[in-house]
Image (cartoon, rainbow, N blue to C red):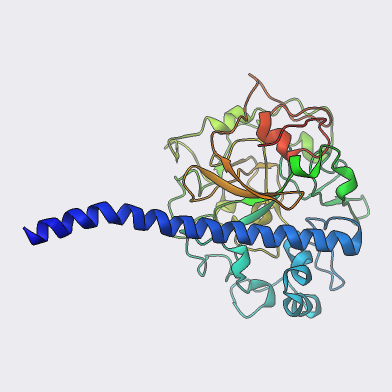
Length: 349
């Protein structure tokens, strides 16, 4: 009888204990995003702009992320100096003694279930927080058309091989800082995890529904159909016919790297929706959805520094055949409007 009573008590109390632990993890995650938001404001105060998501360093490395730029403003000046003074930040990605591979607790959500220390390609340095590409495909550098929609943009390639850094500041956020997303959670790609999970895998689209027209800067972008990506998963799982991109393995695996798969996300599909790519290359046109292991949604930080929890059921695909637009109101609902800096919307989750 006593054992039975104890069993009943455990059954009653265990869910409450688990819920309390998750609440604590979610609070720590919110604090991490608050630190990133504060670091961004301090960076802007010093530079009158946001960092680019694709930066060229004096050492010649041309793919440093916005996280790298924010290091001195997030109490990581020593690490910033170590990265800046390193003879090279590219080469052997399997050793963990490189400065850009150091794990940073404020870049890791405590609810993440993937192994943060092991990756087939890289030694460490993961991040669960990605900068917003807005309601536009993630593309940190391009040939002719920098991202026209987001607070964070990258570099533009010239025919002679040089690149021009593109940045924006608070003055570009005409929709209002409280109505504009800066960064959000994104779960890690698989290393021993099941890529069939929507939160883990990046699906490889068999048809060019994201099209490379964005890459070449042609306008308007008329061939993109995000519904194709959305249809690949349901109930938290991808369809069994889906093939997965190799970049799934490096999703979020390098906080220092500016490629979209490492440190960017979109407000095209709702949180915890599928992520897709076409060419399966480091720098390709992607839809990379925000995601987390918190129940029902994700944490994010807005331009005013406020941290919010966004429900995964937020209004997103609100029109029958949404398109990527260079200007004007987003065709991806409230979530898309939250990602655009100048869509003439006053919508805020």
